[in-house]
Length: 112
Length: 112
Image (cartoon, rainbow over all chains, first blue to last red; front, side, top):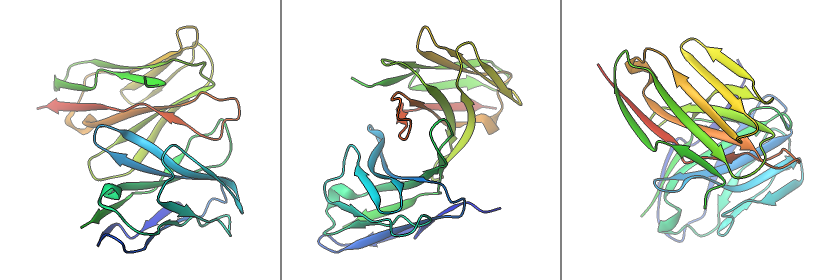
């Protein structure tokens, strides 16, 4: 069955490095989302996209960059990683409003 | 304060017991979604509720939506160790419907 895949599953990097997390969905869903999940904060929305070439900020966008040149891909880039960006990152997609979001398996990112 | 409050934050029950998790919104609900997450994994979609009074069941899990109270409940009957995990509610609280707001989750432990 098609779905939503994130890569890599695990990543360790150093402060100041650039790192890109990939997200790919095969449903042709219009909406895509990036969240981070941290203890005590739950899921926080970083960026989202309503369609190709349309992106918007969520609650915690600082330090992150996104792009969406194709409907199926929504990469998230940390331009200069900081320790506070150590987290589990989830990508999700949604066909439209009034439909559930479907989540990838997550990327566990550690910044040393 | 949180737009979506879940209670309790954590719950420990004996196998075979019934339990209820609540999700209360401070804003009008346009749709309510329940998810389950196992440690280290992504969120799995369980059920979607859209109309006041709506009730849905899947195996031993039942979810209800009380639109007037802006609240949803998730009830598990005769709990099993396989029910253990984190349960999150997500809601459409904006008419645009593109983004979901999430509660912080309820950690459920089921002891054999």
